[in-house]
Each structure stands twice: as structure tokens, then as C-alpha cells.
Image (cartoon, rainbow, N blue to C red; front, side):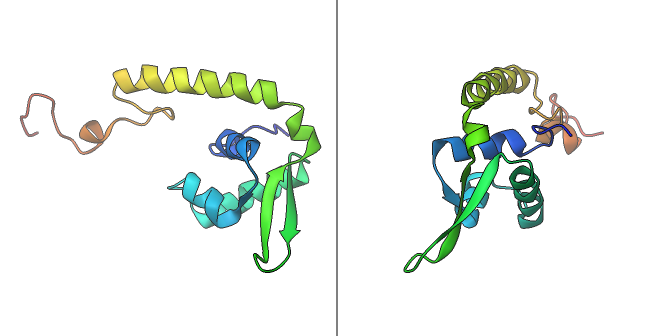
Length: 118
């Protein structure tokens, strides 16, 4: 199994590298991710030993996610991947596409750069 596969995996690990987060805070940081997708990713990462979930007692009374010891050892690699991702995003912005290769909204909606309708 590839541990870093999936659209949201790298972003999740980068956020958790900065700080431990509650599910709702992590979801807000990753908007527009759905709750179902985030739940699936978190379970996969937890099963792989990269993320750990711990209970925070009252008055907070919630679960907090953080990087497990195994994931902390790949911190420098995460930094390199984050830099690579940022460079790709800059390149793709200039090409009117996002990191996933999806065309920018004006292309998706059928708008023409010349202003003519099709």
C-alpha cells in the first residue's frame, strides 16, 4: 500500500505536522473536503501508523489528531514534498489549471478568453 497516495493525504500530514487538530478544525483547514473523505483518509493514516487519535478530557472533551512517531521521522520528506507541491501550483496557475490538472473555471464553464460564446 502506498502510504502517501490520495488527493488529501499530503495536505493532512502537513497540517498535522504543524499542530494537533480536532477533526472539525482539520476539515475547515482542508475545505472543500467532505467529512466522509476526511474520515476515510484519517482511518487509513491511523491504520498505517502515521496518525494517532487521542482523547482530550473535559472541558474540551473531544478527539485530537496528531502525527504518530513514525510520521514525525518523515518530516523532512514532507517539507520537500510541500515545496514541490507549491512549485507545481505556481506553474499550473500560470497555465490556467490547478494541481490536479483540472482546467480553470473559465475553461470548464465554456467561457472563451476572447469573450465570444460558443
